[in-house]
Each structure stands twice: as structure tokens, then as C-alpha cells.
Figure 1 (cartoon, rainbow, N blue to C red):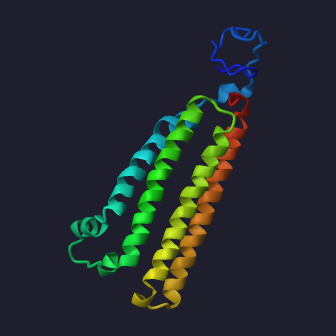
Figure 2: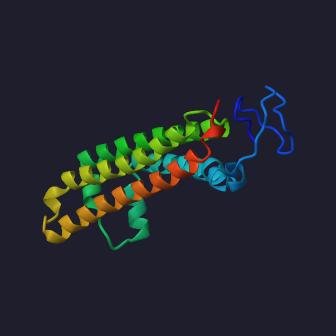
Figure 3: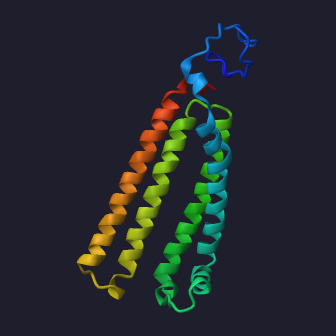
Amino acid sequence: MICQNCGTEINQDVNFCSNCGELIQTTEVEKQGMGWYNFNTYFKLPFNALIDVVVGVIFISSMLDELLLMLNPNLTFTFLKFESVITLNSALGIVLILLAFYDAYVAISMIKFKKNAPKLFYAGLISGEVIGLIYYMAMLVLIRGMITWDAEIITEIAKEIISSAVSITLWLLINTKYFGNRKHLFVN
């Protein structure tokens, strides 16, 4: 359990904080558990950081087309060799590596129960979706001459945008509710 006054970790069976002397009151929130917090802090954020570094290096090193060919040798990805696409992929790779550092920072902030940790977590959720959409739209602009802009393509683009918007909205609702119920823990 965490002292609501000073943030010190204390035993659940004590009545007063050993650090500041504050009266400890067990609330319904503390009985709810910290499973989601633990999952995000100790698994999701570090795993996302690792994946972002690996994918970032792949995009920066221009190995994407080679990996895609290994996965499906029948497909050709000639557009991946265009200079503008290589530049876009390299930029995405750099952004992903920076996002990995951000995820590590958020995980450390969560571990230390920093006051702004939940907001940093929300910002990471939003930025990941926004970065993905920006990349998707930029790639469509770069290869616009290679595709026919028919109703099917426009429908797929609209589905992708709506899917991202719904996904981020749901994630934000779930996490703001969860961390809102535990805001007393984030006091450092």
C-alpha cells in the first residue's frame, strides 16, 4: 500500500505511515488491485519500447523490403526503393526509437508513482496512434501515382482512420477510469 500523503510504501496492516505519521485508511480502491498497473508498467511499456527499437532500426536501415520479401517472395515492393519512401521510413524509424525512450521514461515514472505518470501514459497512447496515422497518410501521398483512388481505397482509408479513433478513445476511457480511481497513489 502507498501512503496517500507522502507516497511511501507501507504495510497494509498498519494504521499510520512510518515516514510521515499520516493516518492510513484502507479504501475500496486499494481492494481493487493493481493488475492493470503492473501489466502496463512491467510488461506493456517495456515490451513496446523493445519493439519500437527493433522496428525503428529496421526502418532506418532500409531492411523493410527485404523482410517483406522474406515473408512473401511473390510480392514486389518496388515503391520501397523510392528515395522519398526511404526518407519517410527513416524518419519513422527515428520517431519509433524516440518513442521507445519515452515508453521507458513513462514506465520509470509509473514505478516511482510520479504524479504525472498517468498523463504521460495517456500521451504515449495518443502519440502512438497519431504517429501511425501520419505515417499511413504520408505513405499514401508518396505512392498516390501507383494506386487507383477508387471507392474501395477511400473506404479502406476511412475504415483505418475510424478504427484508430475508436481504438484510442476506448483505450483512453479505460485507462482514465482505471488510473482516475488510483490517482491518490501517484503523489511523488
